Image: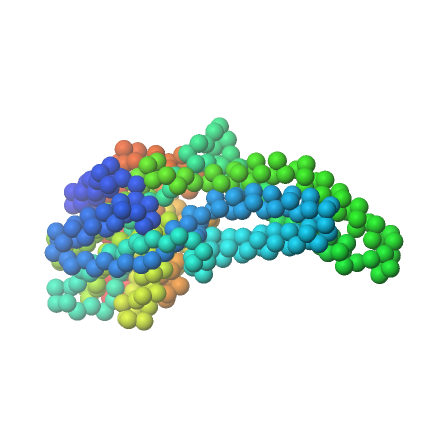
Length: 440
C-alpha cells in the first residue's frame, strides 16, 4: 500500500469495525441493513455528496437463501410417497392420485431450485414472503460537471445468514461440508425418482390389463411396484435424515447471523474511501469521469439489489458508457484475486478489466494474484454485465469454504487494516488504468 493511502485504508478499516461491531448482522431487508444504508448516506454527506436511496421489494428466501426449503421439500415428498404407497394397497386410484400430487410437487421444487436458487431468477418471488431493501448511491463529478463515462464502485451492504454446516466444520473441513450438502441433495433427488417411478408403475396397474399387456408383463409391473413399495417404506427414515442435512444449510436467526466484516463491509468501505480520496485530491481524479459509489442491498438473497438497480436504470442513460468494479470481501492477504465470471450465471466478465486488475495487483506488490470464476452462486457483476456494462469483481478471500465464511466468525479482528488498504490501492490503480485507456 502506498504511504499516501494509509490514512484512507485505516479509515476504511474503522468503518468495517463500525459496521460489524456497532451495527452488527445486516440480513437482507432487516432493520440493521437499513441502518447501514443510513450510516453510509451520512458518510457520503460528510464529503459533500448527495446520496440517493432507492427502495425495492424482494423475497429474501426465494433464491439461494431459501435452500433449506429444498430439504424440507424432500422430507414432505418422502412422507407423501409413503402415504401414496400405503393408500395404493387400499385403493389403486387413491394411490395413483397421491403419487401424482407428489410427483408434480417435487417437479415444482426442482424447477424452483434451477430457476431461482441456481440461476437467481425472480419469477418465483411471489411464492415467498416479501420485504423491502435499499440501494444507496452517490455521484462524484469532475469539477466542471462534464463527463464522458462512468465508473461504478459497488459493495453490498447486507450480510449472510450463518451457514450452519460451515460454522460447524469437523476434521473433514470443506470436504465434510460438501459431503453433507451432497447427501441432502441426493436424498431429495432419490425422493423425486422414486415418486416418478411409482407413478408410472401404478398408472400401468390402473389403466393396463392382462389382456392388453399380457400376463407376464402385467405381473412384472405388479412385482416391480411391490418391490418399490418395500424400498420406499423401509428407506424412508434414512431418506428423511439425509434430506434434513440440507435444511441445515443456514440459520435464520439474526442473533447469530454474520456480522459481515469481510463480507462485505470491506467492499463498501473501500468504495467510499475511493471517492473520499478523489474528493480530497481532485487533481488525481480521472478526466471526464463520473464515479458512483453504489451501496447495494440484498446481494445475499440472489443479487436482488443489483438486479433492481440495473432494471430501473437500464433505459435512462445511467448505465451508458460505463465500467463496474464490484468489491467483495477484502480480508485474506494471501488470496487477492480477480473474479472473472460466475459459473452458474455469467461465465465471463470484462476481459480488459480482468487484465487491468492482474497488472495492478502485481504493481501493488501482490506476487501471485488469483484469477478464477466464481464456482458457486453469484456476485453483483453479473446483473451489470448482462445490462451491457463492462464489469469485474475484486476479492481477497480464501476460495475454500472456511469457518468464517458466512458465519458469526466474520469479524474485523480476524484481518488487518493493511489488507484493506492494499485493496484500496489496487482499486485506485485500476481506475488510473481505465483513465489511461480512455486517453489513447
